[in-house]
Length: 218
Length: 207
Image (cartoon, rainbow over all chains, first blue to last red; front, side, top):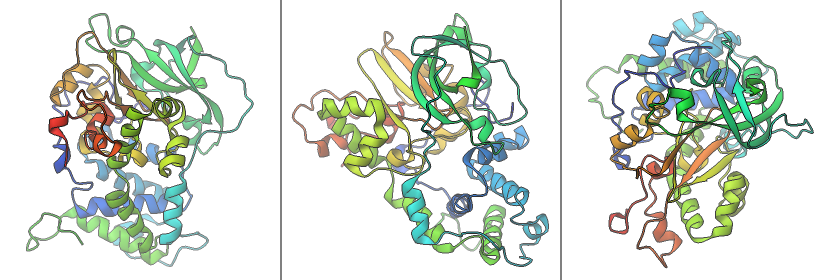
């Protein structure tokens, strides 16, 4: 979707104002710590995948997405998913009062949470699917504007680039966000700054990871 | 509980109350175990962070075979050699800064970041100003970090739009010949592994 999250190339968002590295804490308030951990722990229940999680955050009104702090967006996404998946009701969220207990979930304890974090969730898939492109091939990003989740940023669409590296077959995020676990070849595509931003661009080449369904031969 | 920087005579703010209420609800419903929350927080606040990445960089500076291997498949190699594996580090590729090329990493669509080697991302990395601008004007963005890149160098920006994660191997600072990996690691900042700064010079080493 063309949401408030798709920020590459937007102007007017102000200076970066990075905190000095040595002074920056991992969390800036205790509620951030809790919101992060709640999101991770609820994700471990297996009712949604990482791309559905991203879609829930980016589906907010763009004004909210951009003006919220980072963990406010996480909190908003978490609440949306908990309700959408029927894990809590809107009434329960509003009142803070549980109406009954949830049944049929495998809720990780501390030890299983540790194992889940340590094992991760690889997206590379064993596959004998042939790759349509090889290093050096010229490709163009499909000009598509789906209302659903996509990992092809707007600034790349309809632009031509060169396959720089093949990553193998990975879970295709755009399908995964809709609950379809499908594999597709994934590539790092190099776009020249002049192609993306015009001949007077001060930038350098941008490398973007795109799946085969995002690309056509150019 | 760590001090949160607020005067505790003030009432807690709205977000504090909202998150507390949600946590209580989820615990009461039986959807969340507080021990799991503690493990998640402890992992990313105390165990996994940019000191991991610094050790990888220091090894890469001293061992050309290791460098070549992590440019192909960093995750497998560092899991084997350092035990760095897990969430948001499954598919890391190392990109090497050289006299001709400088690399910088972003996620324009969200906040993808190699957690197993760098920990959770800093605020600036997740911010709209950085995400919007670095793909179009990397030199301008690096200047905001006080970083100058020679005009002849190509600046490559890596937009982390998939589950591939990029770790920048900064250039080894001059004057460090014969240094141990441990001493070299002290020159490697988090920001240098995202590509917005250089590694520190020997006289700037962190203690």
